[in-house]
Image 1 (cartoon, rainbow, N blue to C red):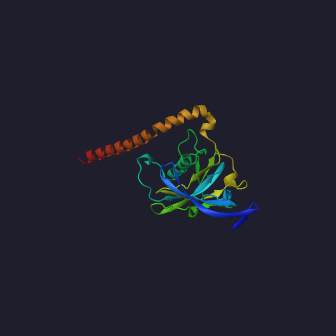
Image 2: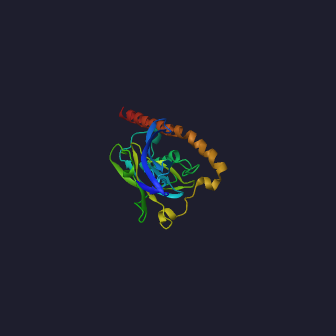
Image 3: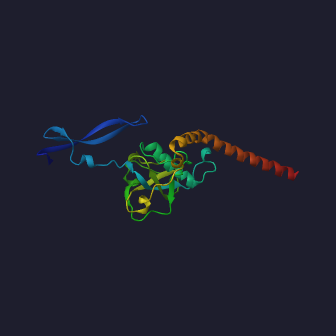
Length: 237
């Protein structure tokens, strides 16, 4: 029993169900305190952070991300290098998971605003680690750790810990106003040069055409391969 606001505070745990965006109900536990028999806020409750979520800061953000060495086949990623696939995953993770944050250039190629760094910047303080997450987060096989950074032109936001079978956020860092990795100017954007009025329609068009461009490229490769086989067959005859 502790004393609070001149009276006694008793604590307990209140269980309640909450429906997530996936319409699955999750069981949450939160402290429930009484001050002299009247419900009140538990001491220091407001300062507690949910470690299953991380912060997307305005400006530069630095992440360490695991990427599996043997990426699964995807028709949409035919001809896309593993490095670019990593950059696309980071951009999509923020775009889909952190409302209010803005990383992507409106007309640049996907992942174009995410940078892969040569090692972890010295002097940055770790914000959160995957070991802090309450649930088990794993990838499907052997993986390589990469350090990336991206610039958030939007608002400060939060998102659930990003991971899937091929990618896993290992840890993120607290931006520092004196560290070059997080204090440098924002990267240039194509849309910034053209103006959003021109950039957005082009981005929308590219987004709609993207699946057809990948499929068209795959068909083209198969056609060239078939043509070469036909040539070799004629030579053998």
